[in-house]
Length: 171
Image (cartoon, rainbow, N blue to C red; front, side, top):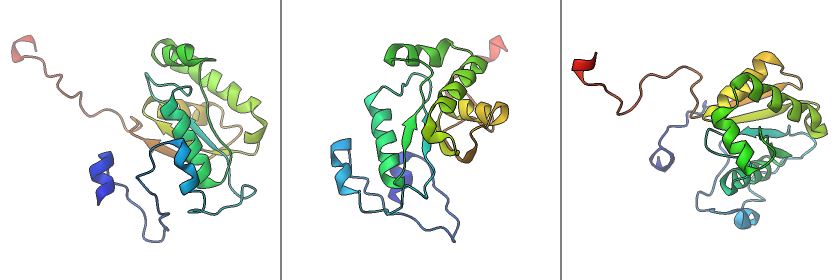
């Protein structure tokens, strides 16, 4: 299927699940009106979505803004990317230098302060954002994460470091 060729991973969906059509030709948020009617869901029945970005990215970057907007459009619910910094620079730098415990505390405080998340939410983590959400679930989980989607995360550990093979003489 083209999905695996395009995105580099295979999406496994149980046979009882219903796939929602996704137009992979949509390339920017200005085209969101093309997909508005593809999934009809009431915002009163859908939980909000919280996204967490990976290292070197930021909630203030255009790519994360588009993913967040698209997520909200597809689910018909409130969608927000929770930064660990208050601007593009700080959010990006914190991904490298703010330790994980502190990052989790900042994330939890921002989640708690958002009134639209008070009844819980679904969470999507990208790369290092998975660790942030897993830490939040383990340490706080109030408001509750109902569904956690991990995208390219290290939740099961790291099996290898690509192209990092030391010469035999140094072992």
